[in-house]
Length: 110
Image 1 (spheres, rainbow, N blue to C red):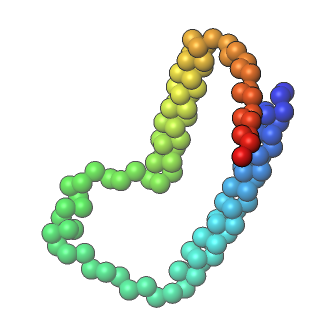
Image 2: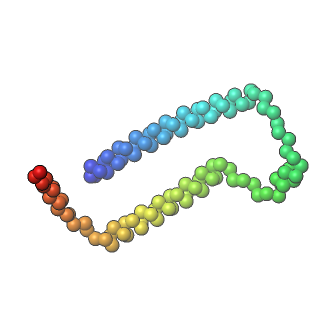
């Protein structure tokens, strides 16, 4: 594994770990809020008659988990396609030839 790969993996591990810890904290806060909501008297809003009739004619919205799964599946396919295209372009470009760095400019005498 190259040093770039090691650095990338280390940074990725840190990012994933931070996201997982954030998710745990957010889930805990959400659960506590849900518990509190059950003890608070929240007024119910009456749905107007026209809107109530319309609700029965509209298709049901997907569950939030269904939205997440569908979007993750799409994102995974897009990333795989992007990787394939990038690797094809790199292969078509051929090897990169090293280029010598230009000589530093000389200061002119004043």
